[in-house]
Amino acid sequence: MIKTVTHEEVDKDDLGGAQAHNARSGVAHFAAEDEPGAIRFLRELLSYLPSNNLDSPPVVPTEDPPDRRDESLKSIVPENPNKPYDIKEVIRAVVDDRHFLEVHEHFARNIVVGFARLAGRSVGVVANQPAVLAGVLDIDASRKAARFVRTCDAFNIPLVTFVDVPGFLPERRRSGAGIITHGASCSTPSPRRRCRSSR
Image 1: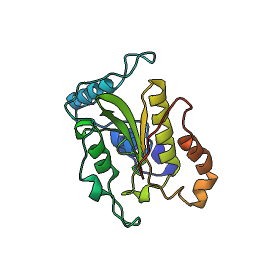
Image 2: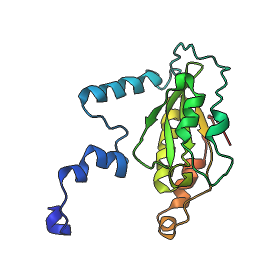
Image 3: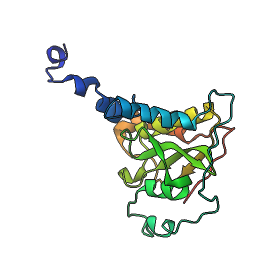
Image 4: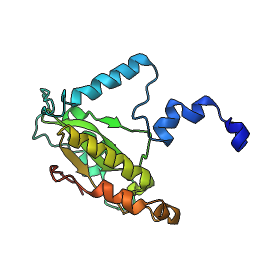
């Protein structure tokens, strides 16, 4: 049918496969190689969430001391603001046991969202990614961040934010598509949420 209407050759994977919905549409949040891999993702994801929206997020014992200082933080972020770096290295240096479960990894890669723990407590992480498009906010990144913030808000999970952003993507067609509207929804915090920022 698509070939008849648009004259395009499209296979099932390109049209609606796992990678298409992970990387392009943003409908899927995780991609796994097989069913056991998908179950591992699901188990880990559920370990960060309370059993319902009225419970507190779970606390997991950790041997990672809360006052730990990671010397790598002195060198990860370059002094030259025009040089890119990987924000995931910063996140892992800060959170418990250097473990970070990224959500929506393949979609809107100029912003990073996911779950981690601080002092054993679940936190949501939202961070600009300077290694991709200098971390600018476009419509997809704004939608991705706003959706994740709403999820954390629904389950009473506090947010940790890492902000290093030059602004919105200056593109005429993006303005017409509502970059200001989507950007505002991304940058408006919930009144119940307290955030901690870096840089």
